[in-house]
Length: 293
Image (tube, rainbow, N blue to C red; front, side, top):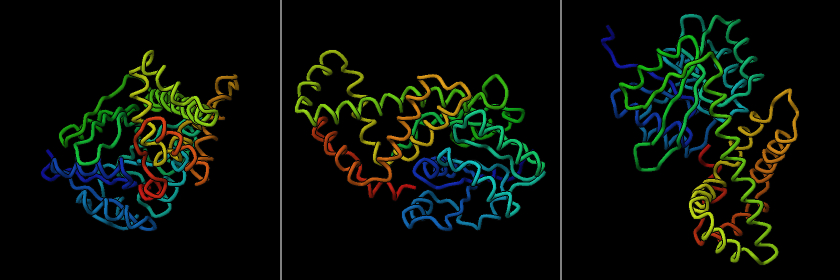
């Protein structure tokens, strides 16, 4: 029987990671993170969440290590942890929380297996809610997925999915394809309507025929500046398939659209202006977006 709190490492303390860490700490877990090379905002967020700030290799002392970062960083994060010995045989259970394609998941699995590490495939459903307990659910799959159920004693909602390793990622990528794909489509449509002077008419008609959708897009638009890079990475994973059908090519183009927004302040500013005019409310700023990473 465990006679000490569960020790959990979180990589990294972005908006979602810090909210999740704060929940775990509030329910009695010991939570640590490494903020080396991260922004002062990330450090402040981790401190406010009462997470212990440690060196990267010290994360290996945890019982469980949750990797929470954009999908395109999954391999690099695992390699960095392997290099310093934080991941090893009989080390912490590695819980990969990024939605990964089958190809990326296979590559990660092979690298961890060479080091004698087993891991659990996970996905986070829901998002950070500043100032509130996050409405997050952790879905897990794989041979040791049941062990992650221990987090339910520390304030998280955990669901062990039926099926093999990769089931959680497949679920999350399906959700990402729908939600992020819709955001990209509607953002482009709203920007085009703004450019040709029919944005107000479009909003009025959508309010009549698609009121629920309009409210959902308004909420997602507020997150777009902060999340464009992460959403680009997720959609790339969705589109990463040997089946190069037209639908996947469309999702790939949407991923590149988000990537352009993330790296082009003028394009993001123009879109933000169109969305603000359309919804009548400010969206998060690009500077704030970069500070959350």
